[in-house]
Length: 321
Length: 290
Image (cartoon, rainbow over all chains, first blue to last red; front, side, top):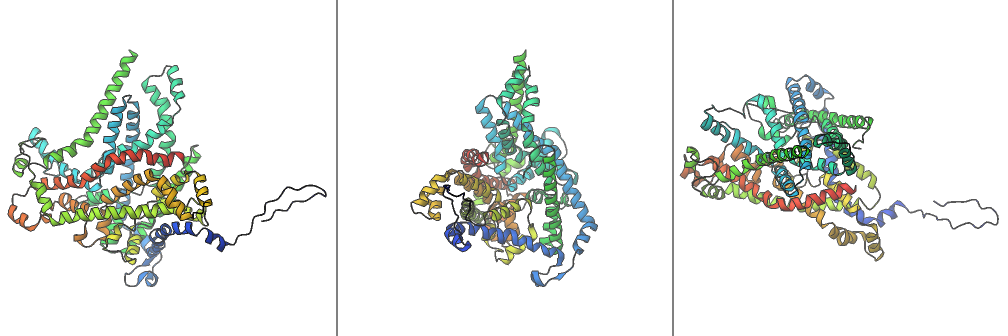
């Protein structure tokens, strides 16, 4: 765009930069190598992330594998109506919410406490060794974790053998009692992920201004006071953000973990939305219904995370976006 | 008095941490030790943590099992090829999105949107089917080719490379592709190593993708076989026929499962020191400067 400036007669006008009008095609050609670099990834996102989003339309159809996307019958909101009236779906949603509640109440604080504990260790080698050990289970697969759990907690498992040999207690069927299912899931998640979860909190603590600690000491604060009045408030933004994310994900659950832990006895108590979608959609091949359930979950999750984000901003903190 | 309070705090703190660390390692060490015991000892429970007689029976059995060994091979193959594909797709796109080319904002928005909304399992499954990947090893590699999170962080890393380096190379007549391969990539080796390792661990640990997309049990990776052995207690199915027939009632089922767990975990343990070194640097660099 050429800039014009009014010239007063006789005045020297400094040279004006004029942007050459470059056509879109010319620009694309000039940048062709950049586009080549982006293309594979772009294709990936389009084919495997965005086209499936379009494929969600089958939630409004009675999808038949033979007829394909375009020719299957349209049934409007039939599946969604089914969704809300189906007893199994209601139970599954309740299971999901119960699990998320347990996770928030019990599992969420653990990395926070651990991070504070680690931070209080003055002896560096000990601190680093502890961190190494605590981060390790994060890298194990769920198959490995659930395998370990199975070996230890099954009817003739290691724990029951010990209880029987040493205390004469009859075997406790940890793995098939429906009431123990969700608590077990939470316990497994704590074991596996709490260590890793401390990383982000430790980073937050590292960002606390040391002068605040010095001021606290001058004011006569002891260990506990310092933690309560300096460390925790310093972690507050991070805690709030992670809590927002957790709330936005309240309908999510660790699919692999639950899937591996489920068995015939605990299925009713343990089935969550994600596993329900799998069982109904893939195993029972009810593609449309399962897609509708999945869509419901994604949409609600999306709304929740936007709402939670706005709420956090309203509270005076920073949101996620 | 003040000092004693401090000392007590420190001791209790370290003690609890130690207990927690032990709770992380002891179950695993227990399994590791017991996997070397004989069936007779295990059943009679003569020993507690340390077997009296150390044997390799269980290991011999699983390595005799063609299903298990083949699954190991599958896992190795998928990890190597998969990680390479991951890095290829992720780094090219990440770098390309730092050069302010046409459409960058739109593409970035598109990428970020996938963090908050995803189509879900069913539509993705149908697309994987439509693209002909069902029952193919590629189903474990392509649908997960890019992790959005990794893409964002690696892009951040590329953005932190000083612009002057790119500019001077361009002025010297290099094209953008050459700037990428000869300047950006070599400079980002630590990040590439870190994320390569992250992707690799993901592939090694992958389980559900195989269950979902691979119908043929012969194509199963090691985690699926492990699940069959331990969680579904079908150890006998995994052994090869001769061994199963020979041992019939004397199969050290538990120990075989334990041996399998150990074998499936060793690669992670071996790689862990490198992971540790890199994730502290790699992850932090990407996020802190952002």
